Length: 319
Length: 309
Image (spheres, one colour):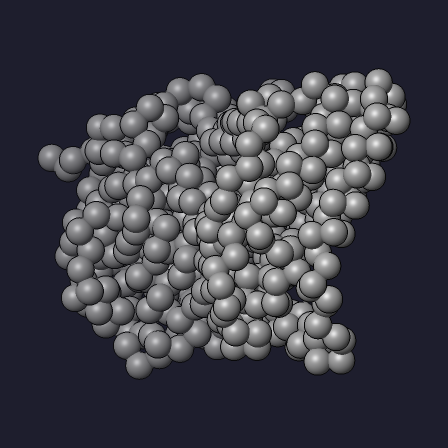
């Protein structure tokens, strides 16, 4: 199996296109960095002295909103307000200003949307990894080896995951390095404040960012799996890229639209890919919970894999 | 006694209710070159795809060295090296990387083995170049190298000389004969080019409309027992009449330059004597080989006639 993955990675990394993708990611992070650096130089340092007062005012208005909206909006939304209040109170109590200097971690957070582009490139790779073999005609030579089709498909999928990890690693690593170079390290180690079931805890910024990366990658992971499935089932990389990218850019909006009217929206894949909604926000549809979303994701994953395997194994290769 | 390496047992292939291959059975032995002959669309490539497991088998079974390709794929396909239609390789990789890629998919292929195979097909000087810079002949040779990596017992080549120039064709043919003879491989070659098959194969199976209509040794197939002699004469009509009268057991036909008589060698002097006696001018006698093409058309036509009747 290792040697099969080695083969797949060789086929990915011996193509110039792959390096163009990685180069684009690096350029984009650099541009974000340059832009923020430029803005920072022109702007003023935020006023730090009165932050406690500001937070108290914010809490007061949040409390008022809770009073007003009670019964009108969902439980989850109310909880979200309560969470904000709790975090603000924690800050006041422990003397942790929200207006710290802009440093490496803030930059990495601001550069998080780069994950979408990493996801896009992963989708392109996933969409091509099976379909290209058919286009090139090499599938015939690939499938007459003493290795079952199932194993070949698994090796290909694992290679996509490795590629995804590699581009995410590059994004995280490069934005950290660039952030440190442009903005320097934080003067004091400002922790991230995590709210869980009514209590606020401190969390190291690094760990928090790793978790953010992980959570933000879930939709990319699911879409890549879907692209892989379409690639194996329809043998068309353009179809796989087209559908997956279209859903990547419109999926969550379409789902929110549906969610406004219908409850079954919670069964749609994109209602569940953003697990961040349970940690920093409120769920799309009332009554959705973290375990529910995880189960839905697992179901979709198994479905995609089953489809890919069944069709790929039964296919008569007549290209 | 030669050893069976491939057994094709009552194989049928149906696609969407249409029968593409209809109950084909034959065996291939070690050390022989088996030619698979038929017009385009007769089912040659489909049969080959079923042997290597690229296509499913609707009915029947195919066994390679005793293992079924249906139920024991990994074990069965291990004995096969194949090129199915064109040898499409990864164009963006070098020839060497292509071989490395396929070598990793079989067990126990060393770097030395790769080098040895490259040497055998004569690609040593260009093996580090990208495949997209190769000529068709070089790609064909790389394809051959790819199937020889794991020392297979069976070599399957679908239209191996397609698109090659005469030198390339000859090269491939020599390779095939050498592999069958020296390494005791069974080679299955498919083609619609008869002259080529005649030079390469020991046995030939003819397939038409999904049915295997004949399997014969090439020599028997081409010649049969009788030989045809062409007598070049000045008056072919008269000559025909003379022979028909004098030797009524022989078959006589008029040709462009004289007459064609199918006879055994001993009868030739007799024919000459009759012709000379009747004052027919005899310019020459030639032994006419029936070509594979004649025989092929003969066989396919007659069998088709039977099938339609």
